Each structure stands twice: as structure tokens, then as C-alpha cells.
Length: 192
Image (cartoon, rainbow, N blue to C red):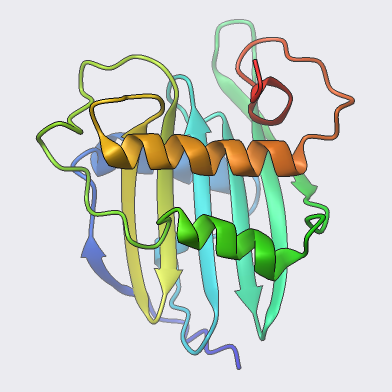
């Protein structure tokens, strides 16, 4: 049973990059006319996980996976920018049901560790100087909000490799095969 309490969740972990990306994620969710994930609390068996993928900030794309009252749904958010790179709008699309079903798809992500990653540590996973694609993950579950971020393909970091695999699972599952890879789009460019 969904237990959205109307109160903010307990915030138990925040990435040290939070001040940088929370503003950009806030802009993206505002343009998509969606609440910030840390503004409401989910209880019971409900969960929402937002996986943001960015080549540069602001976050360019997001996949929102949500289980509410035992039913799964998903959204794909893409930010649209003008010629100067200023974000102007957000495009929101409903994700199709995964081929193997939501539970099996979610099981793959959980097996890869999406719910277990620690805060981004300041050791081998320190990516301040690492350019490229970043994944920022927000989780709202059991009246608790937490987030973390890892750079994709950062081989010195086990969690980065796992996060890259999670991004590939998502991209391959939801790529329609009909879009052209132009720059860094998540779904059509995942195999490039």
C-alpha cells in the first residue's frame, strides 16, 4: 500500500557533489512539472529511483522507475537546450514495459547493486578530474532519501564499472532502434 506521507523523507546520505547537481536536477524536474524526489516520503513497499545520465551538467537525461501499490512504471526525461546550451524545456515520455517484465528488469538492476552503492568515496572512485558521462542516482524508499554519483567507465572503481553496466542495461532495454545516435543520447548511443 502506498504511504506517501506528505512530509519530506529522512535524508541519510548525500553525495559531496549534491550542491552541484541538486540545482540542475531541480531545474529538470521543474521543467518536467514533477516534484523533487527529496520533497516527499514513500513508505510501505513503494520505491522511486531516478537515474540521471549526463555528459555535462545540467543532467541531460533521466530514467524514473517507480513501484507504487505493487505496480511498476517508468519515465524518460530529456532536457532540450538552445544553441548556447541553456536548458529551455524537458521532454517526458512513458517507458514501455520491459520485454522480460518490470520485475525481471528491476531484478537485474538490483543484482548489479543499484540499491547498495555507497556515497561516492574520495578514494579510487574520486572522479573530480574525470571527464565523460556521469550517472547520478536518487532513491526514495522506506521514508528515506539518498543519492550517489559515479562516472561511467572509470575502470579503477568497481562501483563505476557496475554503474556503467546498469546504464547499459537501461539503454539497451529502452532503445527503440529507430533513433539515430547524434551525440551522447542514452538509448540510441549506448552501443556506440
